[in-house]
Each structure stands twice: as C-alpha cells, then as structure tokens.
Image (tube, rainbow, N blue to C red):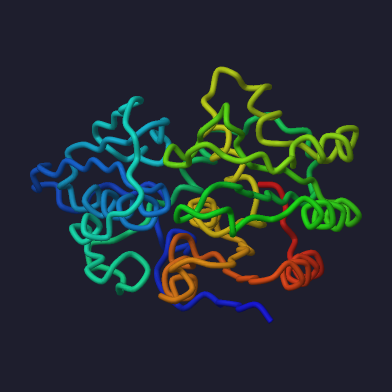
Length: 314
C-alpha cells in the first residue's frame, strides 16, 4: 500500500489564524538580505522560497533573483525581484542548500528555524482567475506529470500513457474537470529540466480526449491567455483547485503549496529515504500528502480521492 501522511498540528498558511498578507513585524529591521538561487526548482520551493519569506516577515529581505523562467508570482512579497532569463540551473547542490538551514541535505534535515512558506494560494487567488469553462460546483483536479532523464539514467518517475488514460477516465466518469500539466520542450516551466524524451502523452490524450469538454491541457489554457507567461497560468490554475496528482520532483512540491490533497507518484529518489513527504511536504500549505509507489496504488489513491474529496473550484 502507498503511504498516507496526515497533517500534523501546526500554524500554517492554510490556518484561519494566519493572515494571508502579513506586514513585516519588525518595522525597525534593516533589509540587508539578497537571495539568488539557481539550483533545482524543487530545492528552491522547499528551502529558498520559505527562507526568503521568513526574511520578509522579519523585515530583513532586500531582494530576490530567480533563474530561467519568471517566478515573480512566487516571490510576490519581495521588495525587489528580478529574473535572469539566461541562467542555467544546477543539478546537485546540497552544499549550497546548507546556507538555508538544511544542514543534512534537503530531504534529511529538520525544518530550519528561519523557514516559513508564503501563503501562495491566498495571494494567487487575489490576482483573479484565468478563464476556464468549469461550472460552479464541478470538481477540478490537476494532474502534473514529467518525463525526463533522472540522475543520468532513463526516466523513472512518470505516469505512463495507459495509466494516465485510466486516471483521466476515472475522474471524467465521476463528473470531474481535468487539467493535464506536462510542459513540452517548447515550454520550460522548470528550467533545470533538460531535453525530454517524447512520452507521446499529448498526442495520445488529444486523440482520446480532444473532444471532451471537461479536459484541457495547461498549454491549451495558456494559449487562451498569451499575455501571461506559462508559470503564471500554471500557478493561477493550481490556486483554483484542491485536488492534485503529481510525480516526484519539482511538480510534487509545487502541487503541495495549495492545500487540499496531493497524490504523489514516487518510484525512486531521496525524498522517500529521508521521509521528506512525511516531514516537510504537508508543511507547505497544510495539504494532505499521499504517496503511491506503483501504478496500482496510484489508481487506488485516485479512487479514494474521488470517493472522499470534494475538489471544488475556488
């Protein structure tokens, strides 16, 4: 069976006592901290973004800088955020992540003292909705996938096309609206992801679900909003849902930032060995994290989500 990690009691952005747009409590603090990071996207979401927000809350954040594609919406609180579009992200950097308090590596360390995830869901909802023809009351699920070289070896953590088809059918048959999210080679939402072998998912899903009114890819939604960059469309859509299916890596971290439930397909990686899914991921937003290590368990988790979650559009 897959693992189920239930939210532990703590004060998080999803808690009603947490002010969604707090002012820095130390008005006499001097902003001196500049934060620039060019490591893996998942590392940034777990370690760097909460570190930057902690400094913002304490009045010590001066500026932030992201690498590759724009992440300005994630760093909405930064007094001065910039993007280096020509930056290339690095793969391995546990020695670098130590400066953010993760002294034993990202997935094995305790939560640092200077760490507080920003309430992205509140801020993103304030920006307004991107268009999507989801009637009020219809449940929405966002499925995030990937297919790429991992640790210099063939892809391991991905949802294959047959399983995808089954998962999507399960949701559609129960009246869900489904958004499928796997950026192709022409769109690099996660800049450290290099060339990707062709999973064939977009073509196969278009053939099977192209005429389905309750199925869209994130690329299709982006085409409707060309004035927004892909990341902003992605973040705004995620803020509207409370049900997610994702895979190991940056997408699983990002999908944990919006509350609700996140089912993560995990086949290999340090997250499992370090119990990061149990210790860290739920702390991003109070989300309930479930891990599936096989496609069979993934389908079981999806069926449980359909039976037990409301997944309403917000």
